[in-house]
Image (cartoon, rainbow, N blue to C red; front, side, top):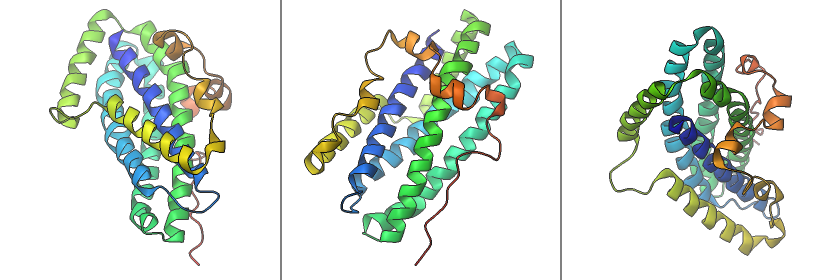
Length: 242
């Protein structure tokens, strides 16, 4: 189903941008210098395309159709995942609040940004793993080709709200950001390459098989989706203001 495959492709782009942000955070360990321009690019990508376009595809395109087709099997899942979305937005707000100070070299702002960014990376990875291992296979099971066409039509309406005519696609922007971050880190700290976690996720099976395969992290750390979205989510603790 094309509607589900689009979400799979966006999850892969999301993971790669998360990897790039994590590389930038690792790179600053030695000299406490954040690559603020690239961190800002990553933040804006998450705000526009992960929190914006991608989550709207799920919340206004996929989830309503799932709930109509199999309400008894899907409503607890979709409501829990929407609470995850809210947690992710909180982390982005925390990152946004500190990025300017971090860019100007303020140590406390940099540490707050780093703490929020690491929390965001963790929760987004876990969230994407759960959706790939549990939600999207369920969607393939219960949705019909007619549902796919209806969801795709809603995706087009969502894209018109989020994307400007002629601008690079989210995937193109992600690829540019990933390449820029890799080059910057390679110049500053070559020892961070290669990155086994990123390499291990690439080139393994067809795209649809990657998305449907049970992902160990999502399946074993959280269990079934109805358990997510509780108060016991990865937290954020800002460093003390000296």
